Length: 311
Image (cartoon, rainbow, N blue to C red; front, side):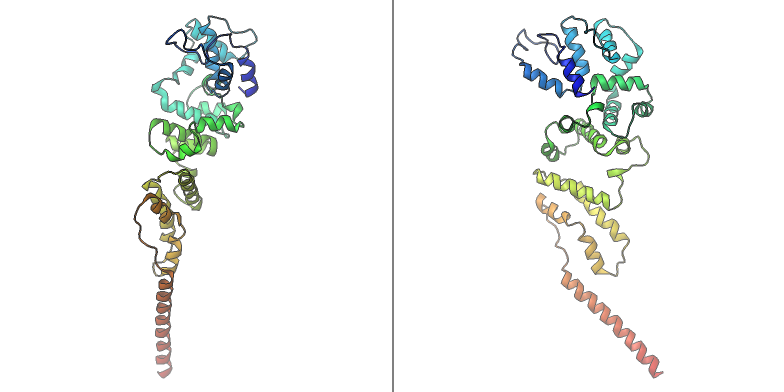
């Protein structure tokens, strides 16, 4: 459901109906809801389809005749007349706590550009009609992925800087990370994060310079937002230099120093977090040692040549 259709349906809401509809705690709970506030909420509401139907049910009215979207009609019948229809029953089952993980995966895949409704249905072992109905009723994003303001509000409800500062692991944080993976990186990374893919890819692939770059970029975003960066991120950044160190000879101290210096964010992050870190080795001393080693090797070579000439 695109923004144009949302505007058309919003104009059809019953006069005086609260949006979104819900149980009232008092007779005056919605008395001061301004039209502009209702419109703003509707335009940023991914559950507009379900809430649109709920407004008519609250006022005990039929849906307008111009409504031709079958998910809206079927949802109205199931709510107003308690009609148990298998397809709509499965759609609403995704809203339960029991299917929370599947719901998060479904919503993340709906945000991905490289997915289709049929492909999502195959992954979740359901029907395409179920995915289509859920999208229209509870997660209207497919036709609005180009609206940066709308999508950003869903992915970063408290703002990008607040998201960078808050790195606490919880259910809401896990859900948002999954949604961001779908919107920003696509299906493969969503499946990897959700544990549905045997071969992680994208940011989960623990190899390569691209992974190191993305970690340091994320560290920069969090630092700019005033966040205290976790020790796990520091270790992950440092792993990039350690992996490159494995392919380098231990006999070349200058090369080892250059590799360790590839992740300059490491010491800066530690300083920012107040963590005491060991000073980097002095490159001048390393050069002197390397020159001395080379001179010793040349001296041994010359002595060998002199002995062979004398012989």
